[in-house]
Amino acid sequence: MEPALASAPAGTSSTASGPPQPSATPNGQATPAASAPKHPPPLFPLREFLAKGGVAALPRTRVVDVGAMFLDEAEEVWRPLQRRGHCESVVGFEPCSEECDRLNTLIDSLSADGADGGSSSCVFKFLPWALGDGSRGQFRRCSAAMTSSMLEPNIPLLRRFVQLEEVTTVVERSEMETRRLDDLLPQIPGRGVDYLKIDVQGFELSVLKGAEQALKDVLVVHTEVEFVDMYEHQPLFADVDSFLRGQGFVFHRFVSLHGRPMKPLHLSANPLQPISQQLWADAVYVRDLWELQSHSRDQLLKLALILHEIYHSYDVVLHVLQKLLHCNVIGCYESLRKLVLSQF
Image (cartoon, rainbow, N blue to C red; front, side):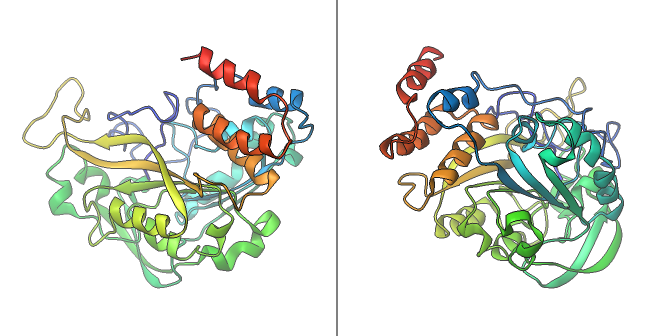
């Protein structure tokens, strides 16, 4: 599992990020919730503007995190939303059982770090299951836990790049039945998902195919995608993009682009700094972005908060809030528009 970008506002390209050097976190172990660098805050507090506009109570978001391992390079993408009190629940799935156990030991510190404090501010649940399309397969545990996958690492390709073979070598194999997110909805508070994050090392399309019912309510999908077959026979970005567009989602942005130097070139000062070849990225999709026809008032508010707190997508936030303006729900749109314009 590759670390999420957090050292710059979401949406900023960071080709130097990616799987850590073997000397950093060689086992991909989970770390205390407060140890990872925090996302930078947005330019302005949207909650206060919404309150001035007559929105007294904000709906809270239901998050599902597929491939939920915490790394110390960056905090999880949903953390800004949770930290500011906008999450109702976070349900994570992590098939590396010891990593899932560590996640569950962090629940108290995660809750204490929320805006409202206390365990009642957000419900956390981490489950040791691999999500997919319900089929049975082989789970490959790799030398760096974050690169473990239901797919076989494509070593002949990976060894062409600096320090990729070292972190993707399979050390253990086990039979595992994947579970469909659609079948697990009863175990999710509210029986629905607003924000879906996926980081499963080439297995993203199988997860999405097992979540077609859940996707009908999902507002934003944040998924890792690959541009080359880092895992054998894996679907690539084009395949994931085609599927999500078929489900009514619109590509919004890449949060980050990652690569590695191709051998024989080796930069001694920064061996992981890519030269030109892009290998993988995090991609963000928004359901029905252009028209927002099927969104309720609460869904529009949740969408605006997700895009604001996590991605700093201020122009799209205004587009979403304009829909509320047409419904006479928000009265501060014009002052908010002027504030955004003044920042650029």
